[in-house]
Structure formats: structure tokens, C-alpha cells
Image (cartoon, rainbow, N blue to C red; front, top):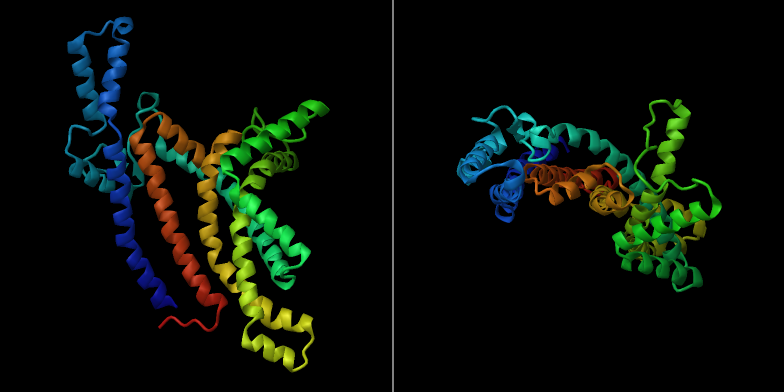
Length: 348
């Protein structure tokens, strides 16, 4: 297992390198920050009193400050290593590059560090609930195949699967807002990841309750989105096990149905679910981009949407490379879990 893990980690290095190239060059070809900056200056030329010469000089300073006076391969090397930069760029040094927002005062690394944990708590909670619900529903559907409960849970799964996350999140939010207005209460928190004034003046218990109240609706959205696919996966896995020879043999020996289910069928059928959990977390992170936007959470999803809206290349690249790294780590954990939960798997 150790040798396999080391080998997979070594393989992950070139994969991450390729992912960084894609993240960098895709953003490069899809954005033109220099032209955008020039257009902003020209639009405000009358109000700012800048003539053509002053605009050209300002654009040159902009290019130099944001490393656009260098060729694309040079910028990639600089973005990756930070060698030759001013200390504000270089992935290997933990710097994502200067932001085009806030007059250069917007710190991408600090913002990502703060927002990462906001998104993490939402994603983990939604994944735990969605996987737990999917396992329970999948087992019930398989055991009660073609019964009424199987059809009902299948219908719920297909409805959840067919609903766009954005539309469903907005529907949940609007319903909660209407309920709050109708009752004259603040039963459901529909805006932000914490109280508007922050939790600084709250006790620990009040802060926990505040966090939970803001988690309920976004978690519900992500939970149902993840539940839909996972429940079908669990149903198929359970049916395969129930129709296997060793389960038939166990029943033929006269073992009680509950014993067969608990000792032989259920454990084997849950193995595939354990291995897709890391992938489910990544899918929830993708869904968080939409959910955080609807509920105005200041997490990584909102960070990405804002970066797109502000045409901030280094911020977009930072989000993409972090997502790529998390994907590689998630797949690695999934592979390792498979060997842990299934004793038949050996890594030679």
C-alpha cells in the first residue's frame, strides 16, 4: 500500500503540471485584460482628464505591474515558479499572482484561505447527508425492488436529478423568504454564511446555532443534487450483490434473511459507495459555485463567480488550479479507500 501510494503521488505531479498548463493557457486565450484596462481608461478619459499619451503610459505601467510585458511562456513559468517576479506570484511559493481588482490591494491568497473553509463546511455537510441518504434509499429500493416504495424513491431521485441546481436553489430561497414574510419571523436564514454583523458578539452556542441556521438551505440544495445519482448507484450495487451466488448460497444454507443482509450483502454493497465519496465531495464543490451565488455565501464558489465577472485572470487561474489539485487528491483517496474497504484488492 505504501509503495502504491508513493507511486500514485509521483504520477500526480505531472498530472498537476498538465492541469496547471491548461488552467493558465485557457484563461490566457479567453481574456484580454490589457484591452479591457485601456477601454476603461478611454471611457473615463474626459472625467479623469487623461489624454492619449497619458493613457498609453498608464497601460504600460499596468502591463509591467501585472507581468503582461512578457511573453506567454515566460508568464507561465513566472506564475508557476515565481522566479523573476516581485514576490507576489509563483504557485510553488504559495502565491497566485496580483489581482486586477481593488487597485492591486485585493489579496488572492488571503481571500482563498478565508473562503476555503466556508465552502468546506458546506460541502462536507452536504456530502455526508447526501451519501447517507443515498445509501439508505438505495438499499431499500433494492430490497423492495418493484414495490411501491421502490417506485416512490426512484421518482424522487429522477425529479432531483432533473432539476437544475440554480433553479432549485432559487426556488428554495424564494419559498423560505415567503415563509419568513408570511410568519413575520426569521426562521430560515436566506442570505450569507453568518449573521450580517458577524458572530463576534455571540457566545459559542449562539455562534453555532447561527452557523447551522445559515447551513440548512444551501445544504439541502447540495444534498438533494448529490443524493439523486448516488442512490441509483447504491441500488444497482445492492441488486448485484443480492443476485450473486454467495448470497444465494447463504440463503440456501438456511441463514435468516436479516443475517444474510447484514453479514454478506450490505457490507459488500457499501464498498463502491465508500470509493465514490471523494468524487461526491468534488461534485458538491462544483455545485457550491451556484449555491453560494444564490445564497450570497462568501465562499470559493462566490469567489470564482466574482473573478469571472471582474475579469480577473490570476484569480480565475487560482480557483482552477485549486480545483484541479483537489480532484487529483480526491481520486487518489478514492483509489486508496477501495483497497482499505475491500480486502480482495491488493496493491502489488
